Image (tube, rainbow, N blue to C red):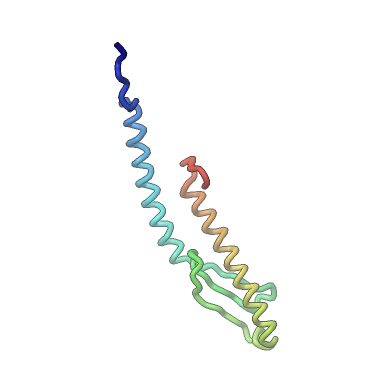
Length: 114
């Protein structure tokens, strides 16, 4: 007669499972904190000439656009290009910031796909 093995959850496995749950709870708390920090952040993007500044939150929410008097002298088409340059700069910086912060948050967790 063979002995039943159950699910294979010995005391060691239960301890690992408990630790995994604790780590998951900590990551959830840290993620909420990170979300709050990103919300408060201001990330500045500039066009090449520095005449236009676009400000986003760390969550990429638009905050404001600043245009110098020199930026106003170039005409609508050129100003549109400058605003777009500044917007893309801010977007790239905010994306990089989010990526770096998420890597810090998930480092050591060995999560697939992150």
